[in-house]
Length: 333
Image (cartoon, one colour):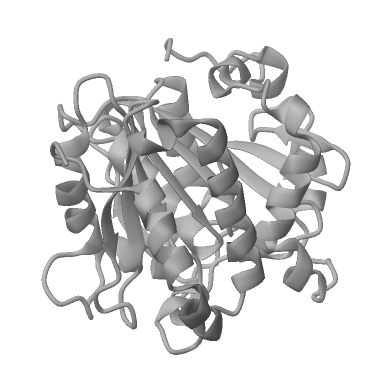
């Protein structure tokens, strides 16, 4: 349809028409059903969902490669890459999660002249997450990163921005992809790249955080990392595996949700270093993963605080000296 993909309201129609079959294979159908109802209600109130299109859904070789989709939002002029989170043990997802050795990721070209020492050449990141996108030896054909570039390039029209999102494993992949895109010197990739993730584990060491924060200061990336306060997954891995163990670090602006409130912080936040270290402690009840790691709990808590949260804007947060710290000077987004 005019160069666009499948309208999102048509996607919903297909899902609803096949609801009985999907119930048999989807363990969280109740949650999926609630999402569909919300989409249908939004469609009834605003016909603009005709401006949302599913361009790509790549699940080929899902047993060995990450699954992602590409959406185009003509209303807000966005191209959105969405990564799926971990599924069952029939896929490589859990092997990826547990491969917590370090891998050298090439420093993005736009950063090389601004960093020192070894960081000019590479930053250290979680090997499993990195390989899943950039160096999957089990991949048949192109790496996922190259496939994603080919998938999004035709839809990044004048004035459009790139958004990346995901939950859990998908959140980790989204942060690495956003970092790579934001530091690219490819002229067709608009800046800033925006990443909004949910329940992300840690993906890199202190050098990765340094490089990521520099991209934020340059106005090339915006990152909102959302998690529930009692979720264990964002606290792991606390350090890398292998001979040379390094502490792992979070990046971006953190929106930490509780039942009736939220806290915003950033690695540069004044006085937040020790507090965040305690909050990121792995000393949390394991049973909490089942409840607090789920997307439904994230959504329920955001819905409960919708009036306040919908008035927050990423550009304003990146202008907040109290949140980012006095030393955080960035170019205008």
